[in-house]
Length: 404
Image 1 (cartoon, rainbow, N blue to C red):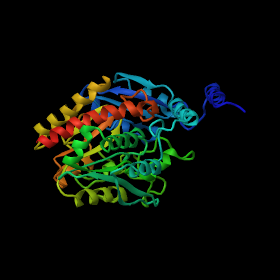
Image 2: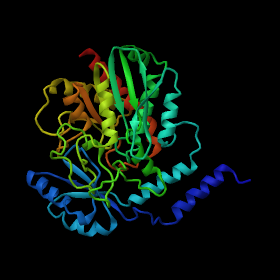
Image 3: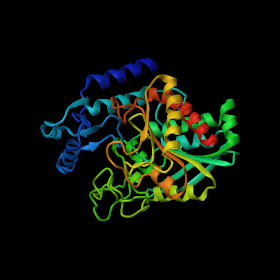
Image 4: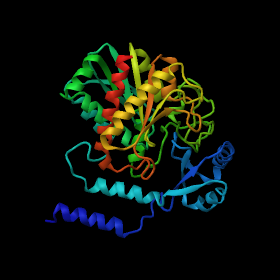
């Protein structure tokens, strides 16, 4: 009988020996520096060139840089437009990252749920099986999947956090699960938090899209949900995180059904956004909402739709700073706290929406690891360290929330 180790080595050798000709073979990710207002406008016009079929990987950035995924056939033309910009190639071949991820899944046989990226059903089943967890269901999707999670704790203040609104951000559901797992543990800090707060956790808020990124016949880089757009049958999906009603369709989202940031046919037109909105607003005394995303290593607070500070800017900045300080201390991986509108505006997003329409004072977003070397295809080996640092950051953040 062939040993498991021999089989694993054979698989690894096969993948590395044969050049991949997958969907993303030859695609590159460029990092473009935006140093002046004139460059910002110029680059914005470049992004409007639909013929290049580019995909912006960074919703939010720190340091005025934008990461752009460019298909192989568009690389030469895209580079020709960058004469006015300082830029670099941060991913030489996107397919190499995808292949490495697939190889890990083939050879990973660990019993830990955090040894690899899991499907939505596995994550939900795991969480709902933890002692103290009560199942919740927010609704269902166009594809018939249910949006599920858990609630737990006995405190008078309510906290909601979710992952997986953007399908390709696999680290988000994994870390969301890890945080909930910790909060249900016997750790004294977790026990104390459960006495102060009642938690509501949704690991995968976009189950249709997430399933599509995991399907061998799907698209690993898919971002949106999967609902067809009758106005443009060739381009499916809406960006759920541009579909919320506050500042819906303002600058920072797209009216083009084919764009990654398409804001939908109307505010809360997606089943996913509507379900989350209805659920959060049905709860009492919600003091914090957190939306986990990737990537960029940022802790973001309102507003995203404008550079103007929010009415609670001082507390927002202080709470985020407390979270980042604790987070950075765990693995010495640097995160930065800042207002969401750092380079380009975003509109119709969860954090602005729940702050403005539901009165959730501490409504924020965390952009998890990394800063671009792997982008959305973060190795599964980083799930646990990312989970640990996020736990530390959120514990400190919720401590600030509780005190203020």
